[in-house]
Length: 629
Ligand code: COA
Ligand code: AMP
Image 1: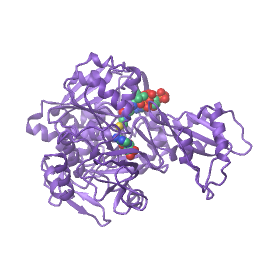
Image 2 (image 1 turned 135 degrees about the horizontal axis):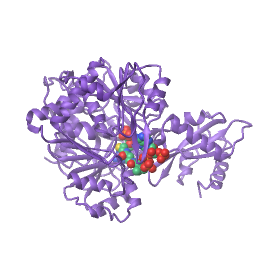
Image 3 (image 1 turned 45 degrees about the vertical axis):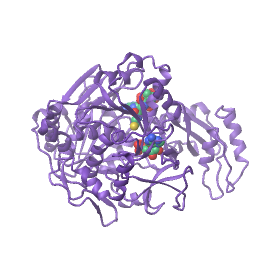
């Protein structure tokens, strides 16, 4: 089958196409209706099917002779630990962990927050929640207490699962003080917390609320899988939007399992038994889809890596893992490749490892810049594929279908639309643009399986955020173009979302924190281009009338505020004090113009500017501070 035939079939007969893909999984009751539209007009896939995602990902494989195959390899250079779990061992561990949660009263539909580092117990916890038909919400361990508190209030979990600490290279990060602070800040209080004590740090437990994981688990009995409907939620994952409040993306069980299982072969060309590695974190969508669910649904071996691409111990870390475990398909974010390239430009460390089992290298999370793609292709001798996706979709919107028909790579392009995604470039009135013309990247409805169709706790928000702007389409928030061969080029966000080292952040949210400083009257947070991290946020602030503070002092205070409110991953560093911000006559800050100025791009001053004199004034200040030449 050619890529074109596969794609065309998914467009002409979506129900038939996805019905066939659904047959690859073991349902308790096979779905009869493939795509249904609810009273709100939103599409749900496999709504009447009965299933359990953890069953499909674990018990099914044990039943069919994969019990002795390795399911998870845990490799942790930061603790000098390596451990393997077979499918049988993992199934048993998950069933008992589900029993442990059932003992705490967790039932189908309850929410459970998982705030954990990259250890196997985080994966076990996710699958155990799924086994109970409950809904997990994993919160990235690098988020600060206020971020965790927001997620506690929004998802109202019955139980929170955590660990005593995470390890950042050599630094032990204690989780309990962060969790306690978040629970203090939140209105909603969980009934219980279960703490996995790690040897690197023993956490004090709060009496009446906290339980020791090992003690509870020792008493727990294995429980079976609770059947859920295909349209029941599997998880909520919060992501940054344009406002200060993160959005809870709801993922339904049925569409998610079908799409991910399909993608493992179609995109990544792996079979059951192959080793697949996504170097990410379970706190992000890539981790959910391709550390946990995709590989396990497909019967592959997945790797839980507690380390960095560099420094643990060196820039050969990725190649070491690929060689040691015979990884066939590998996936990470461009920032990781840039970090390796910076440390080891001649890829001398790569030469120490046998990468012969590796077929293709996949990249996503941000645009893979052509110089990095060229470097990696040349040094590895492998095909390097960029593919584009979002938390909202859970899998690639565009990709090179390596398991269907590999297409030539075009540097700078995230390749061709994936089956099910009708990708269009539109102007602001919804008119389709010609080849090579830049516009809004939109997806014609209906969205394929796995894509979100609601925001947790706010039925209208999905419509407002994604469907209203271009009726009949899902607006991705990204801009770009499609060339004459149908290749999609994603050039960046068209909203206030930025991407720092593959982590999605909202400038609006950072602005709220910066503007909360007692001496700051107003501010604009914009993204500066960064060689390693792609983008880093920078604050342009105006002080309250009469306020004085040294630049360096303000900068230090703002860095501390952002780290405490959002987390160190924000990488907020630079602050420049301006006399005033450029505004339109109606009072809107001209962020796009500021962005272009700071990044040395050509800019046009909009005719709606209130006072054009402000632009040269700002440029002088930025020159003096050496932010522009
Ligand atoms: N818990 C607590 N803190 C964390 C954390 C976590 N899970 N993850 C990151 N941080 C902290 C870091 O310790 C660092 O703190 P510091 O400023 O006090 O040193 C800060 O957040 C920034 O971290 P990071 O973005 O990891 O930057 P770095 O300079 O330490 O490392 C890279 C640079 C490129 C190696 C790193 O960004 C990286 O591995 N990126 C890949 C990201 C990725 O896989 N994204 C995939 C999403 S698909
Ligand atoms: P997240 O939801 O965290 O996965 O971030 C999604 C956003 O990351 C997208 O909307 C894009 O802006 C960006 N992104 C992800 N992958 C790519 C890619 N391959 N090319 C360009 N941008 C990407």
